[in-house]
Length: 322
Image (cartoon, rainbow, N blue to C red; front, side):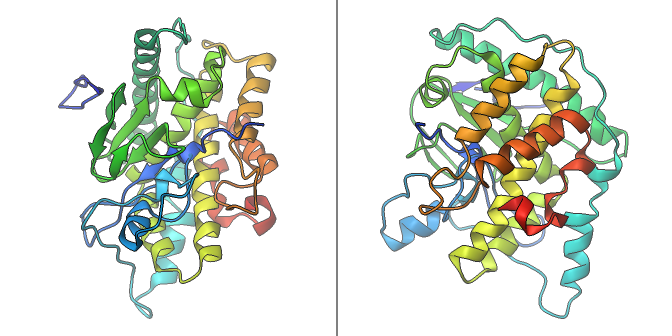
């Protein structure tokens, strides 16, 4: 496991169907300012629920649904204005008023996917750019924002959201400690040893999108509400909206750095192709990330608009988040 310090404060940075994007948002919402929920390129029943029931981890268990041990979820009680709160947090979030992301000078670092050290350096350099871009975005609206912790692993380990690596989970976001977890070698294997840097950039940008959701308060409310649903179908419907929003937020970032990266038509096509492989290509198994078409559509929407307001999946028609 590789841990680094951030510039300000402490931040450890340490088909074949591909691993889902939510490789996960692992986390949970606790009362008040407690630990919060998760989301990511891997989504499904919560790992903690599966562990408690003694069942095996689902092959594509959404890391975004993993919860830290002992965490609890709370949502407003019925009659306590929960609909108004839901609208304010999910549909009318202040993040949507921040406008398009500033264009950033973020040339793609050199990358040799056969060398773990090269991949580690690539991930850290790109995350530096994500930190700078989203910090500026939140600053424009005087919204609080703290960059995520980075844990980029080469060996197995334990997070507040569960052990890693887990089945089909090469990367995830754990809201409990606001950390990005990426397997330096696992993500290469999961992406079929692709040599195109933009594919790994989209994977990271998607997971970072879950951190953006967390900082905006979206992730907390989503996880608590999803956890209160009584059926798998309803839970999956909530998960799809979260995952597709992360696609769009990831696309928005990449669109903002398209000139310097650069991301031209070829790179754009590679990104969308990879996103499609991470959708619900086996819908009979689970429906947590949206159809390949919808996954690509929301990603492309972000690439084109580069505006968080374009990523409001919570108010989208049902057919757009299937």
